[in-house]
Amino acid sequence: MNEKINEDALTALKIAFTYMPKAIEVTRHTYGDRHKVVLEHINAVREILLLNDIDPEEVYAEINPDQSPNSTY
Image 1 (tube, rainbow, N blue to C red):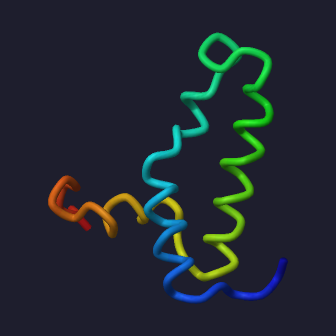
Image 2 (cartoon, rainbow, N blue to C red; image 1 turned 90 degrees about the vertical axis):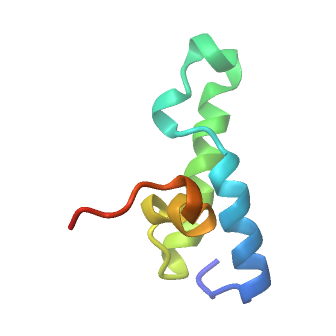
């Protein structure tokens, strides 16, 4: 999929991404035999965000500005 998605779908994807575990949190210990699948899902969402010119590292602050620290740069 190389085309951009509409704004409503993109907003929904951003919200869902904020609730996904961080890749560093996904281990065999916490997710069992599904840990590789969970990592693939996280990467799939990250790829779609990047294809839509969204920095995945900035999504949480955009969706939850009241819970994000102010930028220092």
